[in-house]
Length: 342
Image (cartoon, rainbow, N blue to C red; front, side):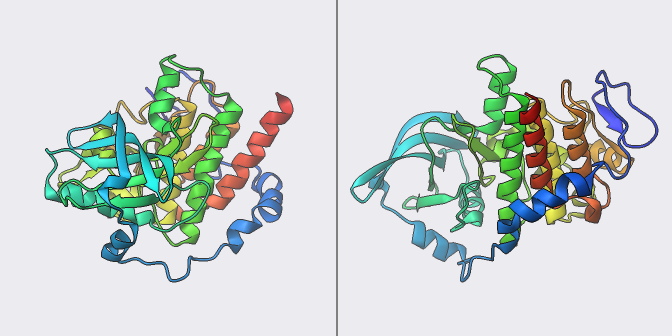
């Protein structure tokens, strides 16, 4: 079994875990507050982007570029109706390495429109840990292209972690994995300041470069490119069930707190190098499982303190979960502690 009860009972997990009570982060004041107050002030001082354009048609108009400015070079990921390419974008007299999302001939008009709608949700946002489209082309309405500034050595975080787990490349050290988690938290904190709920925080919706610099991105094409991560529970909508908070699953409530729950699952993905959470469970059973107090178990070789932070994100009551800035502070503090001991 790969899951653990938060109550007094324990699952027969093969991992050495410590019991985590209702308040799962043992030292919130001494380990979080000082750093949060001194080094995270810039997050609380960030303001909503003024006059941000939210009309999709106007967003698309402002991003529109001629098709001749976009060159598709290497197909890096393909699903049933979606494709991601490495390419080059001509911007004035310069050429930039980019990633381009588009659809295949098999895509319906609705699927093409969904790619654009999901890609434009992060329109005009500027943050070092958030990736947004820099250009778009919809000359062919059924085959739109969304262009993202992305160095050639960047890759999808989930695919990178899986490659490490399979031994195809060296795995990051624990300290580096914690830093990746902190970067996700930092990007999410910025989105929340902008009053945006991401609603699909996961490793599959992040990109990372060769220097382990991470950006949170939109979920355009994720349902198609990572079909095993999405399930339909009878409402004719594919949703990332095993990343979702109980209140989202059962009451369709999407909030900053439900994003933080998903961030906890993303930390679990980092600790397991891209394993699938709750893999033993049928998607239809996840809601009852979580409401009953059960959670993903502590990954092998995952420090107790890191698992404690995950479990804090999985507190049943949304107000009792950390905010993204609080979690960022705790992750930074833990990363600093790891650097001290290593």
